[in-house]
Structures are given as structure tokens and as C-alpha cells.
Length: 197
Image 1 (cartoon, helix red, strand yellow):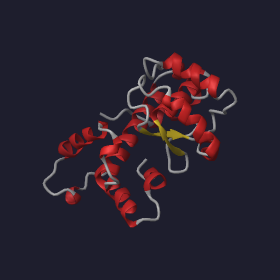
Image 2 (cartoon, one colour):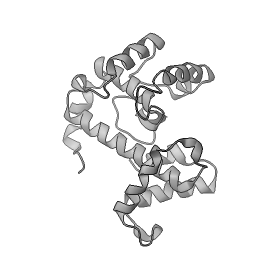
Image 3 (tube, helix red, strand yellow):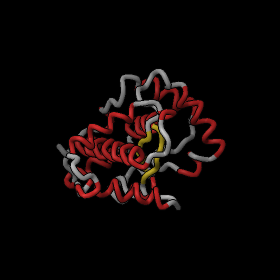
């Protein structure tokens, strides 16, 4: 799970590589990067993530907090998929609206294996932007960075993860759950996974 941030954050800049190392070390709880700070204090700092993005510059510590939250969300969601019949999952109070709008907007999208190039192509971005903005005042944190498995039969990994918005994640995962694409996950992974406390 930790290596997957390499694909999400690490670019050509030295600063971004530092963010990745920071997140890995945070996840492994090596305190030398934060002298005097406890794990609880660092996690409390993640509350700043709910503030508008316009208030922030590209601060490496903020990017690290976003990455940590995205990893936590991915891990919790995958643990739930491994424990519960996906067809029974309710992801938001607006699942029906999200699913219907998604199917109307992207009737031919293959949700079992999402093509990142197609998702992030100029045409794809235009369609997705229109889709996402419909949920701006409906779904909390609709634009929050969220990890999506490219191939729904696999776990989250560096090769199998795409950074999307939260509403894109909901739309695609709702389709996968309702259309049976996530059914195999529970059988394939349930003996290897436990929900972290």
C-alpha cells in the first residue's frame, strides 16, 4: 500500500520525492521527521484538509496529509469490500442519483477495468468535470483526491491505482458493486485482510 504513493505523488521534483518519503515514514511511524510530535497530533493536523484548496500553496506537508487520507480511505474501503457483499453497500445517501447520472453520462464506460488515459484524456476531463460539478453541493468532499483501483479484481497497488476525485470513485465503485464486478473481491482477498482499528 505504501509504494502506491510513488505513482501518485512522485514526479521529477526532489520536493515531491520528499513528500513520498515523508508519508512512508509517517505510515511506519518513524518519529525522527517530526521531533516532539505525537501520532495523534499529526493526525489531528489532517483536519486542515477540509479547508478550501484556494487557501493553500503546494506545501509538501499538506500534500502528505492528503496522501495519508487517500490511503486510509482506500484501505478502509477495500477492507469493507472483503467483508460485505458489495451489492449491499451504500456509499452515500445519494447513491441512486450518482449511479443514474453516471450511467446516463457514461453509458458505455467499462467499469471493471478503467483506462486511466481515457479517464484523463481532454475529452474525458470535459465530461467528468461536467459530471462532477453536478454533485458540488450534494456530495460532501466530492472533489477530494481518492484512490481508485484500475482493475476491480485487484487490490490497491502502485500499478493498479488511479488518483481520482471522490465523486468519480463513488460513481465507478457504485457501478462495480451493483453490476457484480466487485463480487470476486471478497472471496479472493477476505482471508488475507482484516479491518485495522
